[in-house]
Length: 260
Image 1: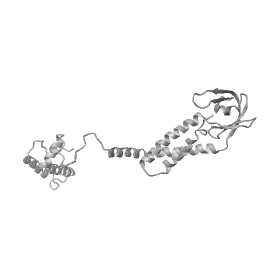
Image 2: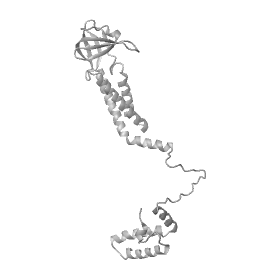
Image 3: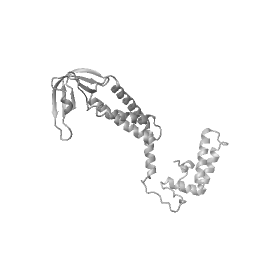
Image 4: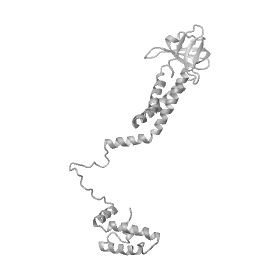
């Protein structure tokens, strides 16, 4: 805030006569007709501005209050029933506006997450749709595990160190020493099905991103499509971006756990 008293060479206790006299003296000294320099023109504007405030008693009183750090009294509200809010309280509208402003500032990153999720889901679907790769392996051991809840399951240990979980019913078709054909996806080597080479019995591998969790890539595809191409509403697109980020992260974790 400008110190108009300093500009006129006065102090805060100066009276109306002293203010007028100081203004006249400086106006004559720095008036463009008396002093043609550029510095004089700038000073003359400052002097006029200072006198407009200090020369009027009401403006001077409000300026003095601000100079001393006292807030000027607010004019009465037109509605007599109006009551100002206590300091530190905010309306729901202002909170929601603040939240929407924050979402709008980070919307670019949310859209980027949706686009990456769309690309990732398309890669997963392509990996699942391509012709699988068949590899021949031998079962080294079959372990059964009793569960307190749900059906009994079995674990097949293969010769290269991989293990595959199957239901106890499906595991009966695979004995220790049996040769199997393992069908895996072309890109990420996710196990899809097991085939007994002798009996040609086939079963799906349930615990994988393409088995019991096949819904995850499909949900990711739908939400990423909405987040990428649905352009109505900042809040909706931002929330979809967050959802797509975590679904993509979860899919990647499942992909790494069950890949060979």
